[in-house]
Length: 173
Image (cartoon, rainbow, N blue to C red; front, side):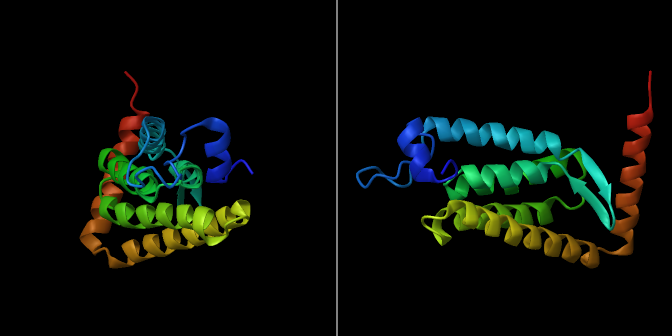
């Protein structure tokens, strides 16, 4: 299938971490590093765009997180895209929950990548689907834990920051 790391390795050269026995399993190819960096940058940019949904907002960087975790076989690359990319996106655009994003989205990326490549050896689509569902649960639980752990002062700062951001975005010269 097109998601399985072995198929990509056979047909597209060294796209993922090399899986042959003679190669060092801790090395990452240049192509994988570049793809990881592109997904990381896309994650940072899309973390500023969100859609209002009941109970909060759905940010578009979740699409990048799931896609990168499915395509990147290396867990650390998945963590870099999901966790570090979300952390940096929150640092630039919405700084209050940035450490929670580092943990929840990083764990989400690792779980999706693990389920895709290790849980079901021959059924990578099934593993990817289960990984995305478990990753969504991790993200929701982390978001709820973040909101419930915030003090009233932090909630006020977050709403003030949102208002300033909306005013700045609506300001035209």
